[in-house]
Length: 422
Image 1: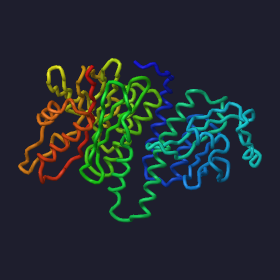
Image 2 (image 1 turned 90 degrees about the vertical axis):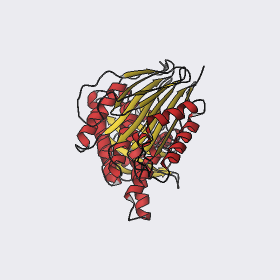
Image 3 (image 1 turned 90 degrees about the horizontal axis):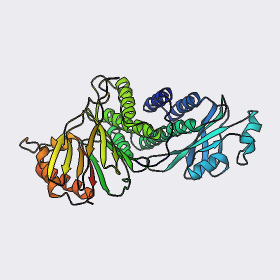
Image 4 (image 1 turned 180 degrees about the horizontal axis):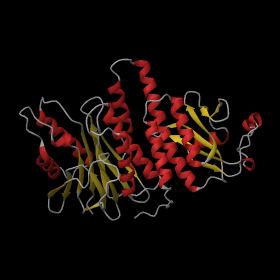
């Protein structure tokens, strides 16, 4: 295991409150209403007296508030004061005694008569690593903000940043198109939340690819760097197509990233996400999902495959392709079900783990013959020594050649992990 700093996991109550915020942010709210929900939740979970969300204006390089408790709208150059420093450094700032900190601007206190004792300021950074804004909470009711408060605030800030980006993208597109836009917007949002780059870990080659069948798809993948030499892997496939399934899988991704940020283990993350989806989704909707933890020191993947299968393990030593089925029920199918122990998959030198949705296996040619698992196996065996990005391209090309003029009726997504030969 890696030697990264270990944090105490927040209480189940705190994680539950944050998951509630995640659900609120998925609703079709206007920007100010949505931000008000975030501030109210932050004040409640962090036991803070006041809170503010500042947005960043990249055109003027200014920070401005849209939602604040107890103060009027503020606008000032980015870089000024504690909020400005947080925006420029993108680092959390915890000030236990504001009047002893030279960075603290007393102007707002002087105008309003409010006395700020302590504050916690967190950057809002989007999926594309762009600065969205800053969230700040003031005056913890029973003392000062501690380490657990910092973790919770960071998780809330991550959800707020994603929600703001989504809202800004939606507003921007609404101005340009009024008709036939719902699906294209959903696809754009979903594409943007896919990983822009794969975390580099010595001894491993990882690549992912996704192509929806329609404007908005129900598939997603994610690769999340953790402490030391570990990665969290996600492959999700929601039932159906269109905006609803697209939002379902992006919600799974958002909740997983939040759980990782809070230090949740594999089992806790799976349970919390499953239970939240079971509460939120209609009875006929669920998400099949592979959730796995890759340890590149032990060369081992532990995972839960909630209705997701088949999973490919190519054994380089023998040239054999092993196919594994799902290990538990899909996410959102039932709340509180007993979760079995995670499965274990050890990767030998040259081995490949293939996470592939059924849009690949079930793609039919004009004669209604499915592409199938064996053709995937043949492609992996034939091109096992090539970079995983090239292997992805070869599989996609072969599927397209096989399908001919037949349309793509299901989303296609692949995530390939290869342990490099020693």
